[in-house]
Amino acid sequence: MNTQRAVRDILIVGGGTAGWMTATYLATQLRASGGRVTLVESAEIPIIGVGEATVPPLVGYLRVLGISEEKFMREAHATYKLGIKFIDWHRGNDSFWHAFGPVGGTIDGLQLFHFWLRSLQAGNAEGTYTSYSIQALLGDQGKAPRQFTASSPPYDRGQYAYQLDAHAFAKFLQAEGVQRGTRHIVDDVTDVVVDERGFIRHITTKGSGTLTADLYIDCTGFRGMLIERALHDGWEDWSNVLLCDRAVAAPTPHAGDESMHPYTKSTALSAGWAWRIPLSTRVGNGYVYSSKFLDDDAAVEEFARHLNVDPSVLPLRPLKMRVGRRRNFWLGNCIAVGLSSGFVEPLESTGIFVIQRSLALLMTYFPDMGFDSSLIRRYNERMVATYEEIRDFIVLHYILTRRTDTEFWRAYPKIDISDELAAQLELYRRSGRIEPATYAMFPEPSWYSILAGHHHLPSTYNRGADLSDATKVRHILAAIRSGNDEIARHMPLHSEFIKRLNNRQTTEPQRAGLSGILPGAVSGI
Image (tube, rainbow, N blue to C red):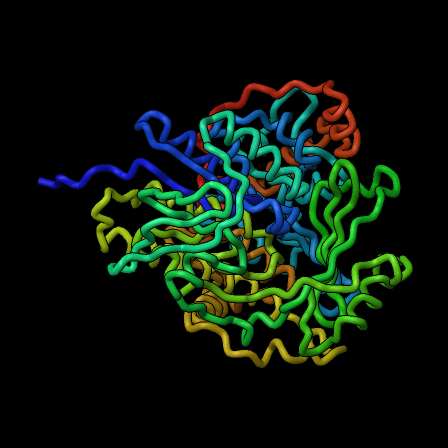
């Protein structure tokens, strides 16, 4: 019989988005069992936000914790995000969507992609694959995913995300976390004491003395104060396949209602890409680039030209990004969450999602004081798979390009991709199939959106599509488009929705339920 006592005391070191998402989640989930959560953070260390754009699982995080979406959006200066629009990524002077959601769903158990491709290969004028996406349609029309006081299918199923102010979001979560029972200590950690087993015995602080816990969570960002500096865990560097290692960011004011689009823009530049993320209060902009192909001064100048502003108003010190992941995310009685666990460039806005995945897996493999090695091993395996899937999906965006105008873009088709990504692309090339892993973040429509957006089509579609009645399929395809048009017709302009939301003139609609919110799926279905 297992006589180990339960883990009760959890100490989170570090605040910011990672620390306070963790505190709020654990304080809520462990309340019934008597778990106690403490967060200690320094007043002197600046917060590095994990990004201002998110993916749909954050909708599930808020709903599971019973957090009002409207309150959150007001406090975090948030807007809706229906996907990412990629501009100039393929040849230049082009665009394509990675829209959230199912892109028309399935027909007779097969992804709509195969029926779209069959029709395209038959010579029909089908339009783009994402022309069947309600999110892409709403995005192009500048509309919100729900009405002011009524629901919608995308809203009910959580097939949307948010664009938010990371600092404001952390403050909002801090208030929620404290209200739900988190003990908050503002102090500097001066030492981390490790015992002979390689477990953390306690931490020492400047003003609060010694703090002890059963489980320690490292949310100290790139420093990795616990997992790396104290426990000496290693780092797997991915700079050989993810070439961007710098970022410079600057806010700009809104320029009319059209600037508050309900999606994130990603525009390819000479040595990387620029984001444009409209919030309710401002527009967030940034340039993610490779220092191997562009020095910092030249990056600032190019970024300024892109924004059409004077370079002197931009920050002169870009953020250095450490690209890769931990070798072990959980060592002994310590788990790394957020930037201390790894970092992949924010092209697909996955930073906050990885925090959520860490927390979900912690609850799945929650230990007792014996800290069973099989639980730790499985947690680490799942986190490795998460990071590697994200890495491969982001690499996919680059290797399909036909841009040859700069050294940066000419370099990407030559990189060595992982065996898993190579196998996926070969399967796709020969059969049109994509087979995400069981716990994959990016479902088939996400892959098809990037592949088709780059005009990278397979030699054939899944031949199972030939078994479906062709007349029925044509009616279904037409019905999807007309149904999307009808939904879009009733949705308000996104800019008007956000204005009304912040004037407190909206009411959260009743949802059909939470059955559509899957914590591991971007599409939410």
